[in-house]
Image 1 (cartoon, one colour):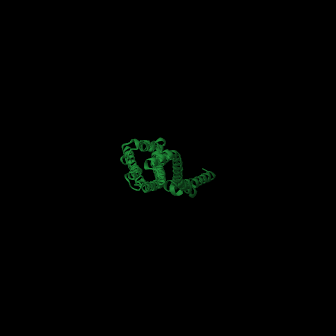
Image 2 (cartoon, rainbow, N blue to C red):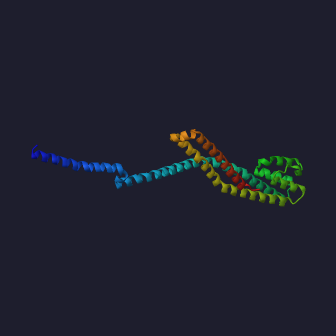
Image 3 (cartoon, one colour):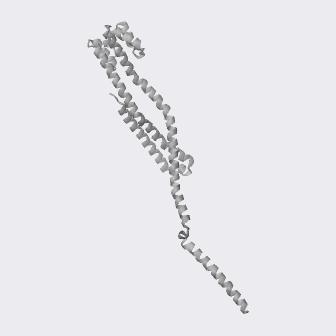
Length: 256
C-alpha cells in the first residue's frame, strides 16, 4: 500500500473518530442523565403546564358551580315566592282578626251591644272565617259557649262573660298585630338560610350526576361496593343535615 493510501485511511479514521466520539458521548449522557440534559426552557414549559392544569380545573369547577347555583336560584325563586305568598296569607289572618277586633271595640265605644258589634265588624271586613260567629250573634246565642280555640275568640268569650269588652278586644288586637310582626320578621330572617340550604343540598347531587355522566372512572367507582357505600352514606348524611337545618328554622320562626 502506498504512502498516499495510508494517509487517506488515516484521515478517514480520524474523521470517523472525531464524529463518533461526540455522538456516543451525547447518547450516553442522554441515557444516563436524561433529566438533566433537558433544556431549561423545556423544563419551565413543563412546570407551567403542570401548574396550569390544576388551576384550569379549579377555574372550570368554579365556573360550573356558579352556573349551577345561578340555575338553581332561578328554579328555587318561584317556589320561594309561592311559599312566601302562602305564608303571607297565613300570617295576615292575625292582622285581619286584629282589624275585626278593633272594629268591635269601636262599635262598643259607640254604645252597640257585643252581638251587634260582632255582626257589623265581620260584615264590614268580610272575614269569612268568622261567619259562623256572626250567625251565632244574629241568632242571639250566648257567646260564652263559643269554641275559644285562639286568642281572638277567647277575648270575645271573656268580653261576653262580663269583663271590660273594649279593653279585652283592643288588647287582643294589639297582641295579634305584635305576633304577626314577629312572625314576618322571623320568616324574613330565615328565608336566606332556607334558600342557602336548598342550594347547598342540590349542588353536590348535581356535581355527582355530572361526574357519572362524563367520567367513566366515576361510573365504575359508583357502581362498585365502596362507591355504593359512599352514595348511601352521603344520602343519609344529606337527609340528616336537611332535617337538622329545617328544625333550626322552625325553632327560629316560632313566635309563641
